[in-house]
Amino acid sequence: MFKVLLVDDEPNVRQGIKMMIPWDEIDCEVIGEADDGDDGLNKIMMHQPDIVIADIKMPGKTGIEMTEAAKALGFKGKVLILSGYSDFSYAKTAIALGVENFILKPVDEDELIEAIKTAGKKIKSEREHRYKQEIGREYLNEQLVKGLFAGDPIHVAAAVDEYDFPSYCAAIVCSDGSHPEQSADYNTVRRFYDALNNVDIVSVDISGALGILFKGWKYTDVMMSLEKLRKELSPEAFISCGCNVSSPAEICVSYSEAADFYRKRFIFHHCGVASTEVFKKSRTAEDIDFADRIYAYMEINDTEKLNGVLDRFMESMLTADNTPEKAKISCITMLMDVRSQMSRSAADKKPENMISDDFVNEISDMHSLSQMVEAIRTKLTDISDACFGKTTKSTMERVVQYIRANYNRELRLEMLAGIFGYNSAYLGKVFHQYTGDNFNNYLDEIRISEAKRLLAMDEYRVYEVAEMVGYSNINYFHNKFKKYVGMSPLSYKKQFGGGKDE
Image (cartoon, rainbow, N blue to C red):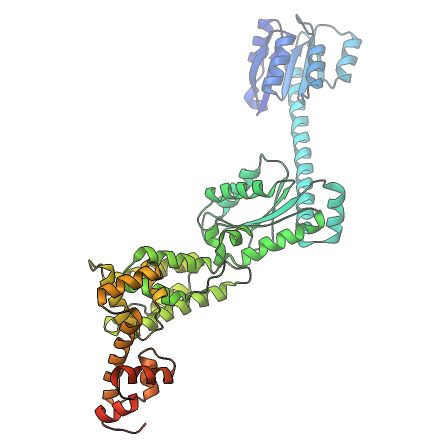
């Protein structure tokens, strides 16, 4: 409906016009009245009516003066002037001001209705024209931004002439098209930036994603706005952001960086906004066997440390050269190493039934690294509770238990100190007080005792037994065995194992 304001110093005239015109039939509504030119000007600027019907002679400002003042202040609506004077000079002035019609009193009902309808048609036509112009400008601007994202020389040249900003930054927002929140997410993006300056949003050729170009924004402001936006989107949505650049020709570099993060969204989905900032927040690469450390914390049933090392494992995936395929392989390899360690040192717990092939296949189909790690976290915590249970044993009892379960692995006092949260020197001292022996002797005695048992079975060669009990160097094993037993491994095997030749 068109909004109409009536301005006349005679209440009877205003009431008569309100009564004589079938406003609904001509798609109009009276939204207000004013009784003089000054009041009329205030209400014009306040309500911004589409059509003003005003008397020419009123206290204060005349209808002509009121119209002139309103136009000077930017009023774009149509004005119909009512006058009891046929003086041509009034009509000439009114026409010069863009007054839509000059109607003589007494007002003819049909004439006024026709004048209102004509004004309405012109307003509608002008709106359609502005809409088409706006659509045209939006289309041209969208093509320009897309061209800049692609690094097209023609569009870059056009932007050099049109843009004058100190910095530019590209971002990508995508949402999984299989879920119903996709369109809602994209509407949220457009609404979020609708009232902000120097932000262009376009559709890009990445699974229907949206590209955002920030012009003249500080990088910190870009990141803050994207992080706020992320909180308003569905969990399935993903945002990536490129670097800040200083010229239109470099916008394609920023966009290319954002697109690279999009292609690796499997890895970076949990980061909130994927950008080079995630590399600054992630730890530097650690020389750590994650499977060993994970299984160690499972064995001592330390959920807090297990969660911590899994977090570090996920952080280790946040590298520029990583790919979704590599990340999946890393997860599955780590899981298989843990399963293998369980099979060797806790075979009676039937780990093959706990970390099943079905579970491996299940996590392989997950859509993000964070999903995989969380599923693994839940599974390993459950296994740790089921196999190694909550215990009331003292720390030293758990240390000894761990050594006896893992004597066949490479064990060092420093490693045990890290697992159990001790200083290595202090742990060595407490260990000696508890066992009456130092760590190395204690470990050697366990290994040699197991080696004697295996050699007496007469099923393995000496070098195989050495490896089975944790000695990778056969000569070192030979010397240790002779020190503790008084004879060589081969002699012991011949004497107690049936005497089969090597």
